[in-house]
Image (cartoon, rainbow, N blue to C red; front, side, top):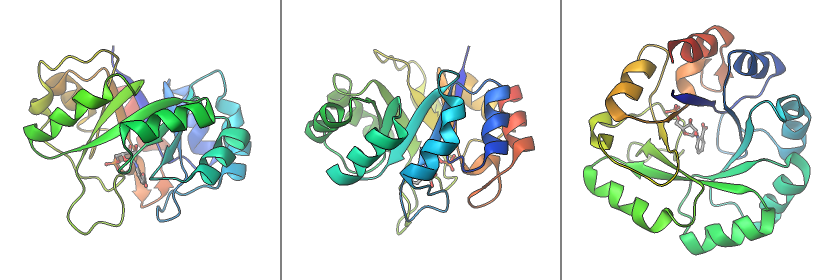
Length: 209
Ligand SMILES: O=C(O)c1ccccc1N[C@@H]1O[C@H](COP(=O)(O)O)[C@@H](O)[C@H]1O
């Protein structure tokens, strides 16, 4: 069975839809350049309803210790998703600092990019293979770009891993079947406009899986 993470939630209605339709993980993006940015205090109030029902993930990009500490103390996520240029050494520090599990997002456009997973397997709880964003993009994720899912065929990792990038209700089942991904992650593909999650599309995505 493939499970899903719905990322970049900012409203109670869309978070409830994700929970009611069986999302295994729900994500708060704490990155001010993102149209989905939510500050830790607001996220803590919103995501409390998800505690114990789905894994709560804080998505960060090269965050400093002050922000990570704030996230850990206020939002108390189960997992912190590192979506920047963090090194494995930095990830070990972040785990120690926050007490949260680690998801490491790796940008992928060619099969060579998958080699980066080797140094992360001992460090991250879960790897996430996300499409490398187009040159000049302000965001390292959440832009709806995808990569050739067939690149993932036959790849084995120690822990369950996420496929991300350009997924939506129409391609979710095909992406899971082609890639063999145990977990899918989606953001812009379940929106009606950048940063505006759409309950119907969230439900359709989760039903498609
Ligand atoms: O969603 C964002 O705004 C975002 C910002 C900064 C880093 C990561 C972000 N999102 C992550 O990217 C994946 C893929 O996005 P999409 O489905 O292609 O839009 C998303 O699921 C988040 O984990």
